[in-house]
Image (tube, rainbow, N blue to C red; front, side):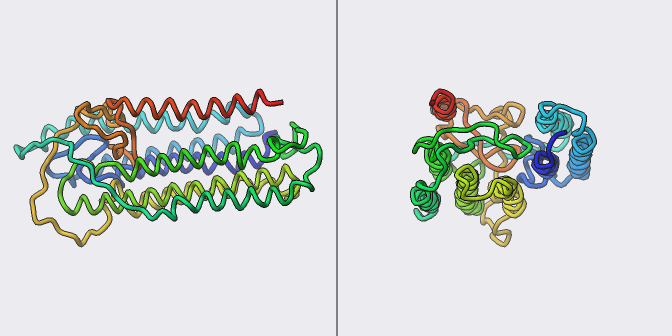
Length: 358
């Protein structure tokens, strides 16, 4: 029988996936409908109907997968249940592409003869206090100091991995490497990655709309996104410390369930930020008015499936997602591939160190 702890983690993930994908059409800019830029009546009744149907279908998929998890976890191998969230993502993406195809047909009837302009505008930087970058490092150093102080009390042989039943199944001899592996040899690279991503977001351009209101909204969105990433980094570091503290026997093994609690805070945090700001911050500062008419932009060709951005004339590395909240890479920029290679290299090297170290 699969432990209840696994179910308590897996079910919220499944619910979050369905809810997040269902709400994305309501969070993106009104003129971006299922990844397609609409020129004309963006509040068309057909568009409203498609958004609502997408939400209902995604929630239905989420409910079905939740029930499958609850009903079958006694009989099904855990590997099968681990595949369920991935399968759910594939299904909700298929729903997205279904409605996207209908929007593409609808666009022909809604387009007008308004001016078409380039989708690229120069970079607009934002400023975030350096303290936001320092907080995770302070937390990390604080936990490392706790570990150094408690190090003499760590058992000479302690558990390094726990099964889903909550019982230890791997042990290691006491050493600085084994004791501080999580908070030092994993925590530091993770924090560096978050810092790099945050800096890239600060340097990202203001998107497709050159109006003053959009620039203000986007700068505010970037500032909030950096703070959100720093908050997630703080939560992950706390999670690593709790896991290390349990292996050190600083926290009783019976409290192993608390490891899942900080991670579960990330989902509502992301959802709250997405709902309150909208894509690229379009929900912020609604009272601001532009003195100029908004230009319409034709840039669908730069987005493969509304998900993958490729524009050789745009030197940005990170760009706001066309469908969803957050950022994606410009796959026509060679630096995007260099960043991906570095991230995967860090992950692979960390795994190799963990596997090969005695």
